[in-house]
Image (cartoon, rainbow, N blue to C red; front, side):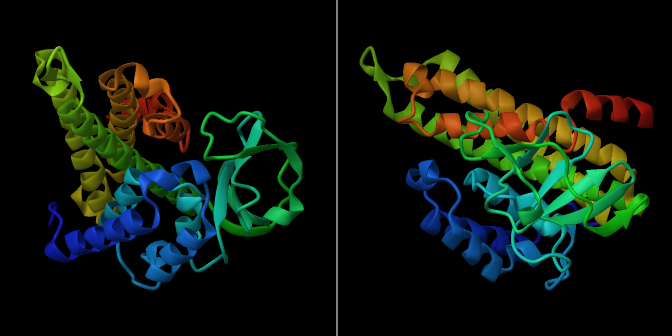
Length: 304
């Protein structure tokens, strides 16, 4: 079993990074959802990796790391989970949530509804609700709806459990990308910012912060990659346990690195002029998707 990325997988990842660096630089983050970037991603095959290209999750998480690293807005996970069964962007909502908040409703063609052991697709046009005035992540608009009309059935039973599992893993990959980019931003700023006639990166406390960010990211990356390999070949181990552990580590890496990066940036870290806050708020949001830290900790405890 191959746990390290192959040269072809790394080339795939580099290609997506080059595309995002060119089409969605940090300066474009405040603009939010970009239909042109979305079309480029779809044309490149990002959302059809597992259908048209017949690649596994081990390849897919590498691509989703890059999407997280660029903080790309839009319904990424739902679109990939329903590739080949739905056209256009697809957002995800769990019917058990209260209040029922639907992200990216205006930008989505369909809504993937997870309801216990059932899942269905509903047209976004069939939903109506109130836009949330100040969502946690300014790049993820939310609508509060009373209910989601039942559409065409997509899956039941074990197939729904796999949708939830794969969704948690892909969200974990996004978190790894966020954690990695925050490490890059913190190190880059520490090398440039001067205080008392020295770059702040020369101070021991800042070095420790950046080193901890790097270690946290790499631990989460290894866990996510191992979980993806396990999902592709369950003879390797317990896929549910691997994903629960990976999501826990990835959420911690993204959320704690967010705070550390803000700290390295000092007072500037809290301002709109610095892009760090976009990653912080996205990390907070992803940490609530496809199970919270408590949910995955309880699941992990039961599986041990």
